[in-house]
Length: 157
Image 1: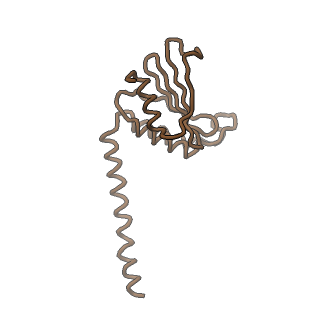
Image 2 (image 1 turned 120 degrees about the vertical axis):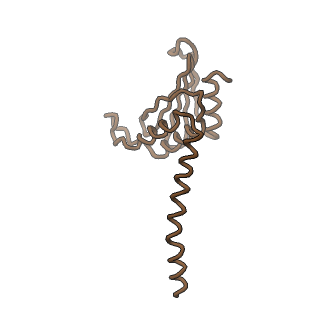
């Protein structure tokens, strides 16, 4: 019984010491390679979690943590310099909205609590015309499919 107590006493102090450096190390790596806008965008998306129920005055629920996490993963996966800073907004039903505009092209993503990612793609000088719009839902490989849409928006596809 004395040996069990001894091994517990040796292992317990080591675990917290190993976790903290790994977390701060990854934080530094992200900031070294991310486009300048990414860290602020990640913070703003995370800040949506502080909105209370009924944040819009129409009874909307709080922004779902799964939608926040999905939006943050997406932004981190598409962090390249040629993208402008996205407009970040809460969306009815607990979702997160990201909206980019580049010239006469616009792209909007809505990250739903159920994991679906809806998009609206708009092109042309008259952005209000239905003929200029395409919408859909990304259900698998959202980072890859979303990246293809963003490449379209910046004009490389």
